[in-house]
Image (cartoon, rainbow, N blue to C red; front, top):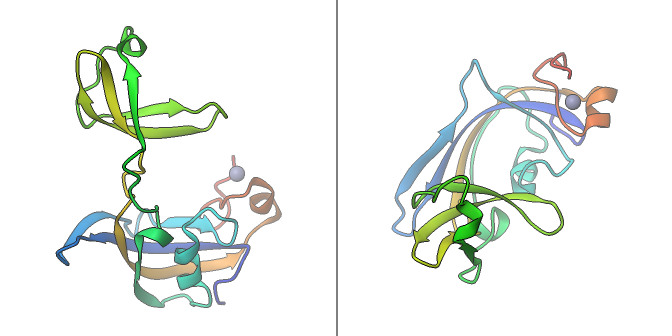
Length: 166
Ligand SMILES: [Zn+2]
């Protein structure tokens, strides 16, 4: 069976970024005990990731690179927020490097990285942590099957065999 839209796809993958000097930096990997299962073709994954996997079959291995503009976008130097200190009266000031869970005016949750704390504000970088990064995936296809009605209804996969319902 080959990977196509509305399949629940299980893969093991290793993700590196490729830095400007060509150096590969390890980011994360799945394990045989805990692979990634996702619903293919519903926009859950980076579109280019899904494109690269479309048509592969179980046992296939593929290594590919995704440029920043096709992954998490280029870094936007203007995406910096000055958060008033009053926001942190209850929680206490966060350390530089902390990830802040924030909510925009439309109610969407996102994360910002604290880059500076000064007398006036907590300065947060709103860029996705992987913005500006070239991604290198090494993927092995473990399983692929048509999604169940329930999975399609929920818009996500329920594990390798579709039984992890909730
Ligand atoms: Zn569900």
